[in-house]
Amino acid sequence: MPELDLDDARKRYHFALAPEDYERLPFYSALLALLEDDSLALELLARVRVEQRNPMLILAALHLAALHGHEELGPIYWSARHGQLEDPDGASRVVLEVMHRSPELVGGELWRSTQTNEPGRSAVLQAVIGDLALGSASSINVIDVGTSAGINLCFDQFPVHERDDGNPLTLVCEDLTPIDRSKALPRVLARVGIDPNPLDLERIDDRLWLKACLWPEESRRHERFDAIVAARASWPAATVLTGRATERLDDAFELTDPTAMTVVMNTWVAFYFSDEERSDYFDKLSRRCLEENVAWISVESPLTKWPGIEVDDAARHRGASQIVLTRPGSSPRRWGWCHAHGRWLEQITTP
Image (cartoon, rainbow, N blue to C red; front, side):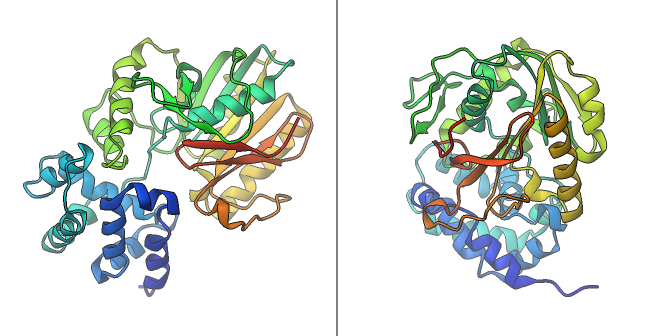
């Protein structure tokens, strides 16, 4: 059995949140600080298959136990969600003690994948698609790679504002550079998702797992998720294909309308690909973008390297997501940066 890389696991815990998120999330900040120095937590993460070796998987497994009504975890996570957790450090120590007494609460869930499919990213997708289609495309197809429950396939169903207006479906996004959101988005003719393990909002277990992947201290995200579950049946239909991206991409294109531009998008998905799969995915999409009426939007960690995209290690972008856009007939180009959950957006290129 290969030796576990505990140093790698420690680093993953340490850099799990962006600096701005540590300030907003005292409970998860305190919990992650304990996990990165805990031998059991390091071992659990190090044993996870490499494509899912993400501290968020550990956090989600603990959150899931709370959602299932665990006697000690349930009240802690409920208090965190409702802004009533008075001692985040003490609560984090209790969570760690529970994990040590019952390691199966986490270990028994590590077959899963972190499938947040964060709808806040639809605020970013709207801006990039609006720029992409400006003056040239009244209709498009969309293919969402790593679609999970298909929420971001309906990116155009969310209002976007810089301030909360009380509507749980509103996405709050601060545009750090001018973004014209006044123009209508192109009509979507076909919506196709691809995922190795797609989730269904109608299944209770899938809904609970998606809620577990949300951060408990962000009550707004929980309210939005509940509103999405209630509204999804009235939204446009979508087709979801089961399988890996490189296996089902051609099948997805077969389901699109050939008279319209097809936009392929991935948001925090390629980060989990193997090097071989990422290279194959890049080659297939780059070729289609050069030869066909196809565009590609990638919203990923800067650690996800794409050929030809210069690495940017600027401190201000630590923890941010890099937006790369490939227009039809062109090569990939960095479009901008955003918060991993779409809380802010910065465009750095012009058409």
